[in-house]
Amino acid sequence: MSGERLAVSLKLTASRLSLTTNFMLPKRLSRKTIYKSQWINLHVDRVKMPSGKIIEEYHFIDLLTDGVVALMMNLKKEICLVKAYRYQTQKIAWEL
Image (cartoon, rainbow, N blue to C red):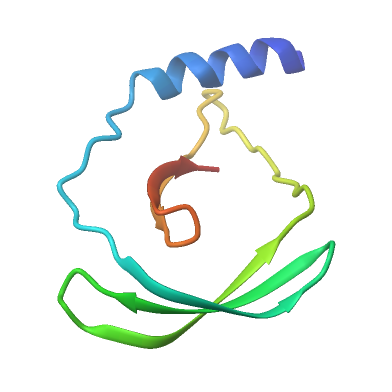
């Protein structure tokens, strides 16, 4: 399967998935940057969880470079996606 075909296939599959959710998301109350460079930043956030609990020191590493992912298919040419919440982006999204 060519890279172009695979991208179209993933786009069509993702458009059929429901990304709606009723989850409450954590809220950043404050941020202190501990380290900053052209490759990586390190932050310590104060975060209020949906339960109301306050996390005083939520450490967050912000990588400023590109990443890589391995894409695998089973024999039916299906791709496994995981729906996950990421604090860094404040979104629930599908991931490989």
